[in-house]
Amino acid sequence: MDPEEEEIMQAYVNFIAKFGKLESSKTQTNDKYKTFKANYLHVKKHNKKGEEEELPFVMDVNQFADVSAEDFEKMQGVLIPRVLAQ
Image (cartoon, rainbow, N blue to C red; front, side, top):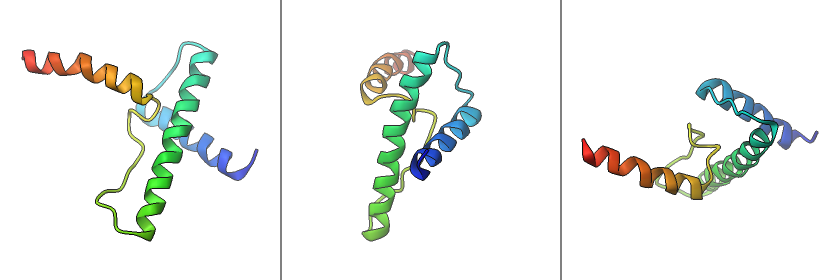
């Protein structure tokens, strides 16, 4: 395993432990890992760019790091009405 892949795998293990993420199948775990990896690399790229030029914010892995942009938008569509209804 190359060093970058090892770093990403370790970050994913830490993510699972920190946020209590457990998937019901190996397929689902693999899908979530692929999404996490893409998001993790996006975070790293953004923050590296921030080292070279001033950016208004730093990114970090959070509880949504294994959620695709499409699924996140769907979640927001479900969560927002509940908040407004209270």
